[in-house]
Figure 1 (spheres, rainbow, N blue to C red):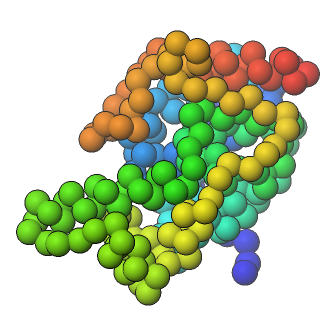
Figure 2: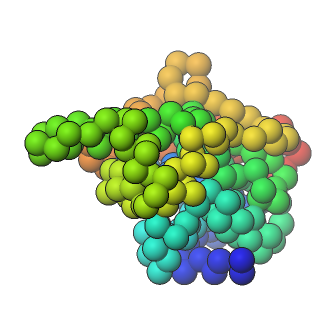
Length: 226
């Protein structure tokens, strides 16, 4: 399959030459919409610290002209690898939640992950939301029936039409080993902030954005990137 050309990406750069470029890998599916505003704030904070930051649209997401039903995790992994290969200078891949499932093929000097989650967990959450929505609409469904339906045709979950390949890959996907890696959680022992991915609507947490930028900047120095 030919490499994807990403139709759009958001780039925020410092006033001078960047120390490094941070490739932001957002959460997957509807979680990406809930965190986008906070991630943009983090990118601005990174620029103030001398980093360039890029937030690409994945095939089938946001401004992409590709239909999500034609996409699977392999295609997203390849697309991110293409983006990272086109960046000059040191690259730090910063992944949030399900973004950690697709970041390991990118070429980078270091990786940083926030609250990584397995694909099976993401899939169950979306399927349970679909079952609940069906129940409210007077339609009977179950996790088993949805799983069976997903094997034959795209399955609509949280507004996303997921291909049979995407559903199958999500069911067994785990974040892969990369090095050097810093993996942090959300809370007192990690990044202070709100789990915006659990909210029904997009939100914004400026303190969380600042903490993300500060932690990535500190990690870059640990990795010898300055």
